[in-house]
Amino acid sequence: MASFELVEPTNLQDAFALLDDEDPAVRPFGGGTALMLMMKAQLFKPVRLVSLRLLGQQFDGIALSADKSSFRIGAMTTFSQLEHSAEIATYLPVITKTMRTLANVRVRNVATIGGNLAHGDPHLDLPPVWLALGAKALIINKTGERLIPVEEIFAGYYETTLEQGDLIAELHVPVRPGWRSHYAKVTTRAEHDWPALGIAVSVLSEGGRVKGASLVLSAAVDRPTRLVAAENILRGATLDDAVLRAAGEAAVEEVHIETDNRGSAAYKKHLLRVHLGRAIQTVTGA
Ligand SMILES: Cc1cc2nc3c(=O)[nH]c(=O)nc-3n(C[C@H](O)[C@H](O)[C@H](O)COP(=O)(O)OP(=O)(O)OC[C@H]3O[C@@H](n4cnc5c(N)ncnc54)[C@H](O)[C@@H]3O)c2cc1C
Image 1 (cartoon, protein in one colour):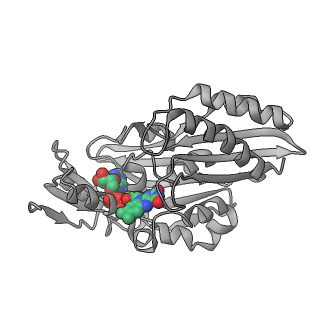
Image 2 (cartoon, protein in one colour; image 1 turned 180 degrees about the vertical axis):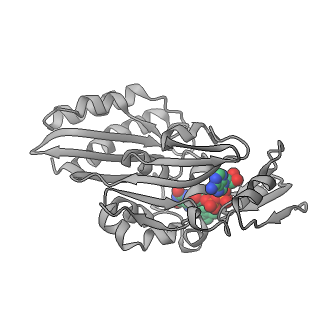
Image 3 (spheres, helix red, strand yellow; image 1 turned 90 degrees about the vertical axis):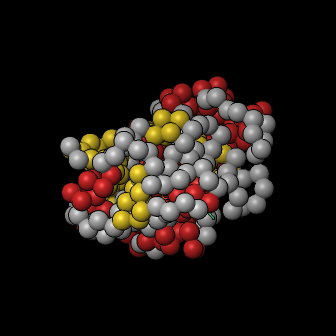
């Protein structure tokens, strides 16, 4: 492995100065789990890695607002911290459950939610869940900041809209009373394998009638993708088999699914029809 510089700035001004370089081989370093794999595979040869570990407050911590309507989660929060947060388990239990089949303890102890989003890998488990929950990301750079829906981070297969020098600093996640959420990691081999499909749903329903729905597909598509046509079918409908089938068909029609080593496109479309319906039934009891 070629030598490179690993720096640990203790304030934002120094971090931005160290990141201020046109060279894409200068990158922020979160937990390093994705970066190290890319470096070992010689897919990425860094010149300088800028650790965000010592940047402090804005990048750390899980805070529930006083009125309990939203969470602010620092981008350097590790998966383990999310997994063991009692407040997350109470207000966003879908996150705690998603952790059970996500990587392993060693990875969860260091991988960060910022690095997980910035990596842009469509197979990752948490990004579709953040989308379904309606989360926003605070992006900062040396000239300012912007708060964007998490889905706007993704531009394609391992591609993001983040510019050189942009840092994901925080996630803002609403707590939506009455909404129930579920993530289905659909694997075709072992439970801990990479998913052939990730399906995240968040639904508000009353007496079988759907009042709001966020449905997201990942892994089978090039980026986590809202299933807008399927959402439109659900919204206002009283759930029955025909509505669930129509939503599944709409979902299959609105996305482009490729064949890969986790299954043919036809097989994955079939999985989508079946598992989207099951995920909706899980959260609505229909
Ligand atoms: C053995 C193994 C098993 C795994 N299994 C799973 C699994 O089952 N499910 C799953 O979802 N994932 C899995 N992962 C992937 C893991 O989720 C990612 O590697 C991890 O989320 C990346 O986070 P990180 O903090 O380590 O990122 P890093 O490796 O530090 O960085 C990744 C990318 O993000 C950039 N970056 C980091 N932080 C920021 C920031 N705050 N702002 C802007 N850019 C930033 C870096 O420059 C780099 O380009 C696995 C990984 C390993 C090694």
